Length: 313
Image (cartoon, rainbow, N blue to C red; front, side, top):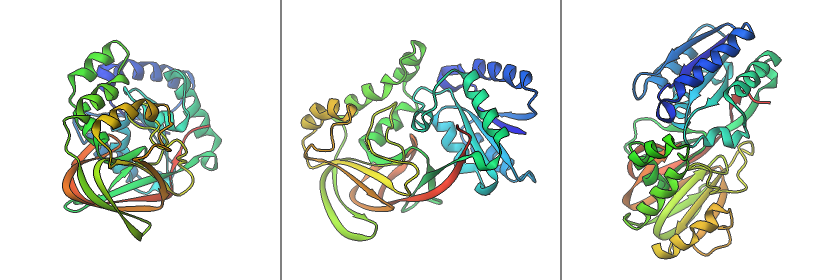
């Protein structure tokens, strides 16, 4: 049995057409399934929770949508030990699918998921998840790709309601949304000072913080390799930060960031850790997998090793 949560509005409405293609494959393969369609923000969260509370002890839960829908579903999931998770990417960034190395058409994605399901529970690919908690937050939020504060979070917040994103999606250039908004946001944002502690050891004081991103996969924002060596199976997060450098210099370094050549540039740091605590002098925007969480001053990232079983070959 496959359980589907479908966001038909993903990629400016292209999700509906993708679901039609998937139903053809399901019929051809004689696969039993149940499907739910999201209708509002937070709906995927509640649907995932409802599905995971069923008596089925081997739930194959598939998301048809973008990274935001994936994040909602993962946060709604309970009883992770009995869930195998799959995705048919239909968003503009699709960093989750990219991080898993998934390529191909919707039909190919569906065929792969069915093959993995039929191979049995032991065939699932186990990956880490991240968790971010913050002062004033009611509950921690899980993330599969990344979470962060500062520039990348501000860009993600703007992208959620961006007319630029809708326009670029229509001409199949949705991934450029993040680059356009990054340049736009860099010179208007306010930096702040703060302190970082990795795995509870020592304290590193930072000035003029531009961003701090906790990476589970190597790339976010439509494929920007913030942490080129990040590994979602090593039980650690790769925390990438930019601080203490002028905004104009950061702008000039963006091509190096996109080319994954930023690790040796002064002002950019990448540190692997199981947990990272941050205290800021002024609030900064926080995101988890591109979803806005709030403006925060104290937060913690931590890795949850092997938390998610994925339907991938």
